[in-house]
Length: 143
Image (cartoon, rainbow, N blue to C red; front, side, top):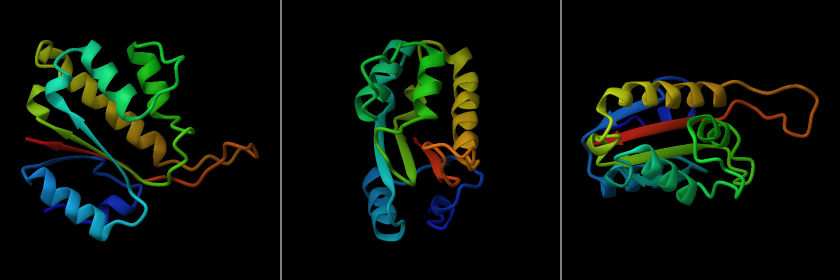
């Protein structure tokens, strides 16, 4: 069971492994975490980078200019301005399938996701229209 209070704060751990069922996890989050923007991503659709980019861009509604490469993926994940949400919970089902065609690159991808989460944890105070408070951003990897 994931502590719901964790998902409401922009603090680590940002990437969490869980063996809960998807439905139980969704029920728990919807019941206990206010204003969470929950996105369910299917790891079996992300066995390679092409599938990863497609799954993320569809589910998170990446803009048309998304370049379908790692830098563009990170850039879009650290922006998400078009969604205008204040708490993100990404759930990756079948996480064992994530980059299964490139297993030696999975740890690097998770490091990139960790950096995205960390970026959201920092407030932006530049006196600009895009300033924001720190935002909870967590990724849950389901078996």
